[in-house]
Image 1 (tube, rainbow, N blue to C red):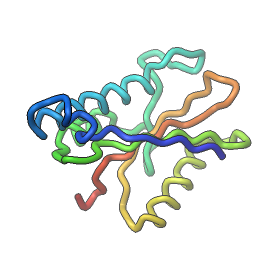
Image 2 (cartoon, rainbow, N blue to C red; image 1 turned 90 degrees about the horizontal axis):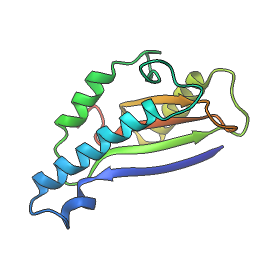
Image 3 (cartoon, rainbow, N blue to C red; image 1 turned 180 degrees about the vertical axis):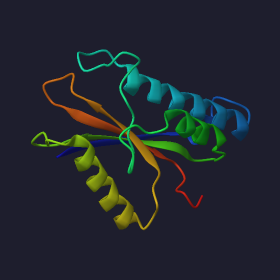
Image 4 (cartoon, one colour; image 1 turned 60 degrees about the vertical axis):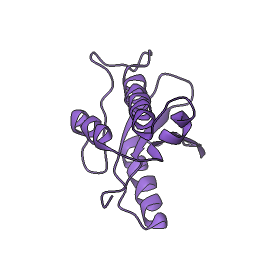
Length: 139
């Protein structure tokens, strides 16, 4: 499996602005932009209105509530973590696969992770974009 990761953090923007509040605002904007990108990236697999987000329990996750959770994050660190999962062999059920990977990650980290994901089937290598909040459910 190929895994790529990154994050949007207020520390990335701190040198460009005068306050942590402004840096956090910039990181939140970049995080919301990433959600928009993975939902609406061009491709044959794009549904009208964009691709559907899913999470650990729902095939159609509440995207608006997740965006609101991002907007409420106040941190001098990561706002979101970005993960791209590229299975070696495309699983029949990418959502199930993603849920298993994220469950294992949460167990290894000892945290109750909050995440949403989108499937991309618009390339020769289907993959899943996962967005994990920078703070777990316990803050």
